[in-house]
Image 1: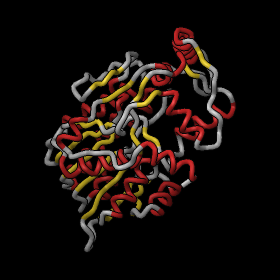
Image 2 (image 1 turned 120 degrees about the vertical axis):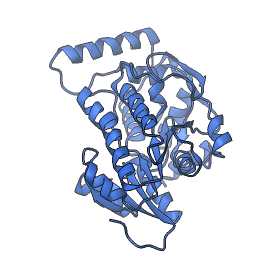
Image 3 (image 1 turned 60 degrees about the vertical axis):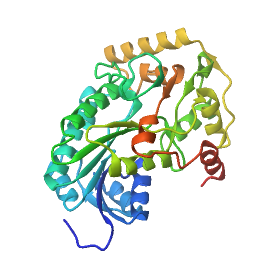
Image 4 (image 1 turned 90 degrees about the horizontal axis):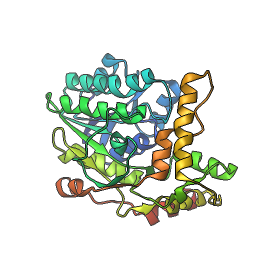
Length: 331
């Protein structure tokens, strides 16, 4: 599928129809790259095409489709993942562990030189606060949260392939937000509007965040300068109180922030009991509160991104104030 082009080069992207992946495609195109993006449905193909990429029909189980899509590309960005706070183990294993193995194998076979894996601070989450942690903090593939456990194992897969003929690097944003979000912000807004959003323990813990523009900027820098097997946190400039940040987010959508609270001990017990009930009984949908959601909503998660600043030259390109103003304008 290699094509002659006067462009700067070609990039292969998985997860290009999503929030971060879509913005990545747009930035790559603006930087002079041709882009091919994996698309597992006609709807996804239309979405990546609108953003400027050539769709590659297939999914994370189709190694040959990905190899053909990555042929002639000098860099690849892997963003596709099984995301969620609840679900079947086999879906998380297939989407996050096997899928990462497959795309790495495909890109190596296609001769891709640089590979960037979009990960998450959730690889460290197993029920304890994270306070000013850096990349030396231990991963938790044993986490009871399937998303955390399988994303941790996906990083281990990347590290095993880090020098297999291509340089593979890991980037970890936290609480990605901004214009174009079709998942997190709409969910928070709907919960606040319906009165279901509550502040666990008052919501006064601090959190790091990463605007989508800063996330993409970090990934592009990693593709240029990241070391084989290296991991980089990328965040916004300052940490923020969780309640203040979420309140400002939903307010940009014209929704009054909630005032109700839930005691921390009660919320923890509810999360544990809910998960147990949903495993034992034939209940539909997701539990009202999972442990992963409880951790996010009640425990500090502050990250030290000085390694990315030092080794990649990373600096946020979007301030929190600018990002919020974009959302208020509806842009």
